[in-house]
Length: 443
Image (cartoon, rainbow, N blue to C red; front, side, top):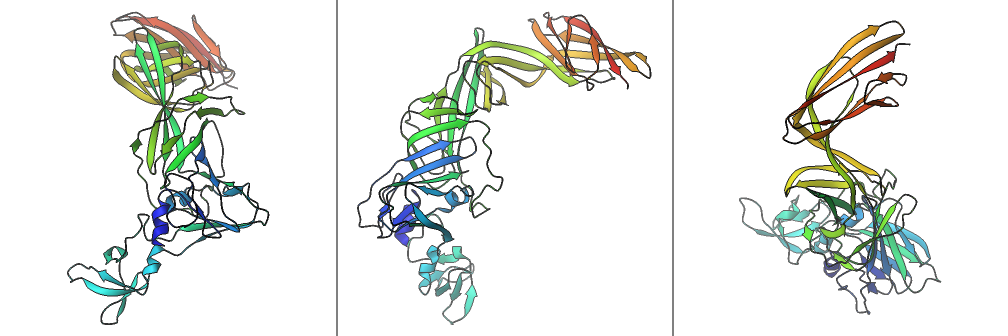
């Protein structure tokens, strides 16, 4: 049992009926006299889960998979299957803990304020010991010094999946499952300069399990893919937290493929290693930025009361490629000027976002009631926009009138449904005034 736990940190342990064992990831198995081989894993990684496709080559009769706790707790309900090897049933259960092997053996107990003493471990489940006086009591597992090296995965019992193969099953198969413990996300850097803007992207692939994957084929997918809300398979709690760390990558290019019914696909053209409890960062793509512009803006709802404030800094551009949703860091003159997130955007569609307040561009909004009757109310809205910058700046003002029958009139002001908008260029150190009327039916 001690040797079996040593192999668990590299991959799920796969056992055949004749103790034959296939190690599907990086490290070879350690508990078999039969021939073993390393088989690469295929990953289809989505932005909040992944499909793992692990080749297996059992001998005959049964295939047994012993899972590390972190891999089992991330498994998605009803997704575990064995393809290419017909089976008559699959049983998922919890095997005995490693500490059960110590039952009946002498261990050393260390307790605060007492000399170490040799005791006998009677029952591992609740850490029941018998001391030299023959008395029984429960202690903490961390207070025991053991005669054998325990596994890194802890003393807890491990989940086991056992597939009973059909008589006609032969050759190799694929163990497939969905897991929330492996995912990816893009992150972008928008670099703004005097000549325009450039956009670059990285792909962060995160492995939150103890499994170290040697990945053969990798596909990154982005889009709205819904899964069952119950999420976890057979267990609802995570066994422990994992800390993702940065890891180097020797992978090649990530190539965009044809979309799949609204799902964007990207293929990695080389194999790579995905260490346990790690995040591997790969260069993703460098889309071509089109129609980039920076401006200030205000997006608000209509109000009968006046107010004042400052506008926000906005950026807008189009990309020649589909952009999966992710975080964006904006740099100007080498300095970070803000971070935000963008949603998935098709090629050629505008990406528009705000990076916060611009205190150098302010507004004063005043409202005058022109008339109010039982049938309608008419308001005159005036914006005074001031620019204290040393260069001109373009401003976009948008108001939403929460009445589908409202009518808006004003020079340079447009109405699209219930949204009122206008655009102006504010001169350096200058100001601009715009006025429009809003007629709102009262019935």
